[in-house]
Image (tube, rainbow, N blue to C red; front, side, top):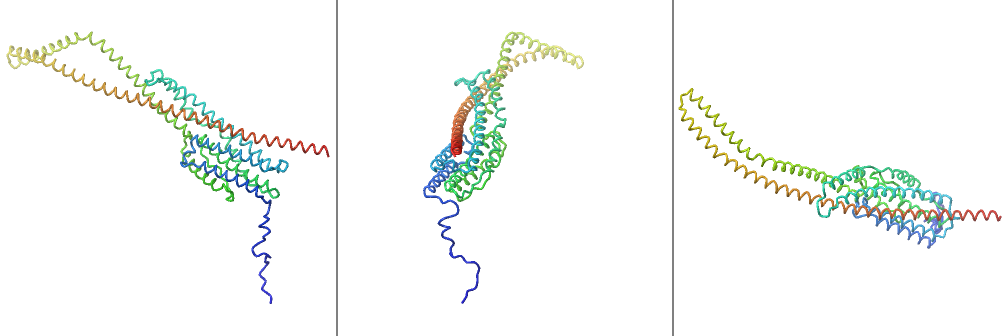
Length: 449
């Protein structure tokens, strides 16, 4: 009895077991599997360390220093991996060599641009250190001359800080090209080559991500970070995706505001500089007003004593004139109305005596009120001056601390970038040296043949 034909049926109902035992492509030995797993575990661990608890930390020099340290460690690890693979350069495919050389030269250009920008920022701090030295008066208030010098330097530094640098623009094109060339090459006949390609793919993906963050923060220009899909089969893919999302979201919210200064330490110095500029201008104006008031007060003290006697005489003369005027007026009224002239004269004398008694009393009261007003005004002015003096000295102290943190951060990050540059350059030189040796061996073999 025949069964109905239901199409081509495989001899093995669950697939070809030999394909499971011997998968397509090169088979990885236990040693190679262990080497690759160790490398990718280290890559995942480094990515997890770079993810900060507070995502705003990516804008700090301390996080950028940690990121460059991570790159240096990873590039050192891959050099160690290549050595442990014992894969002679003669077995390298030409495409592998081209990928490594092209990537390394672009990475060196990015390092040069980063170092140049850090040097520019550090040069700007020379002006900050100069003006802080100008304002250094111990615990005393800076003089008028010191304030004027500091104001000029502060204005110049603020203008420089608001300028955008064009030195990092070339990095954007290099990063785009690196991400465009990023791919996992298929290797069929070399198990060691397969491990090498997976390791190179991982380190290039992480390098592009970190360098794009450094360029974005130092330039203050937000552009979406380079997007590329990382296969989930890698042990480090989850950590990479989490870090990418966290950093991309933070840069989008911070740098999209259009702020020129993105580095947190540099922004702190800029805030102090603007506040100090306002306080120095106010202190200079207050000093000028105080000097002017002192000059006016001094001139009054010189003029009033000389005119004091004449002033009293003038008052008496004015009183006499007023009395005479009133007498004449009353006389004219009497002439018309028939009032007695003697009575008028007597009234005039009485009025004059009354005014003589009242005038000194008013003068004395006015003098007391003026003294009270001057005393109250003097106390208030003295309190305001002390408050402004304290505020200015505190601002100078805060700016000094912020400037020192920025200086140390820039120095440390510059050193890290320089070390990373040397690591990349050393690996590139080693590859070129091996290529020359390999080519020399080939030429010698051809000559012998």
